Amino acid sequence: MNSFPDLEKLKLIPNQKEGKCFACGQAHETGLKMKFFTDETIVYSKLNVPNFLCGWSNLTHGGIITTILDETLAWTVIYLKQHFMLTKNISVDFLKPVFVENEIYLTGKILEEVSKRELKVEASLYNQKMELCAKSVGNIVLLTKEQLIQRKIIPDSFLESFASEVFGK
Image (cartoon, rainbow, N blue to C red; front, side):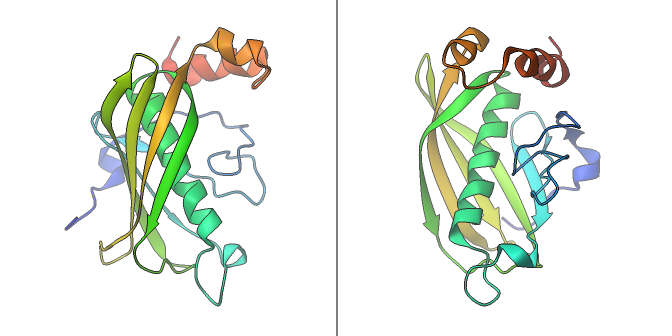
């Protein structure tokens, strides 16, 4: 990737202001507070990983990188497919060091429809030089609101407000 788009010129994907998700929740005190943007074909994000999430020395912990990539996979499906989902599996290739306290850039795109209920999605993480540092591919299972409620994964009240804010339904 040679350059990253100006996120201010893209559509901000709505999310709940009081969400407590570690990755994207704006109300999580020590979370990443990720925000996502789209050009309607790709989902984008950028963030600066805080120092307290380091692994060795000043490297971002691999688990944090995986979390960031997983969240990018999720929001790619949530917005582009307007669907509830869960990650079935994820693979991550760590290609270059990712340093804390440095801005990183993310992209997410849908690769293929595996079945009516499953998508293969890719998320990529770039450093300030736009060098690919980590890449993930995940299989994402599409779930209905009823399936999430039945499995007691997410409370009904949250799903209603989330669908209203994010899907506009």
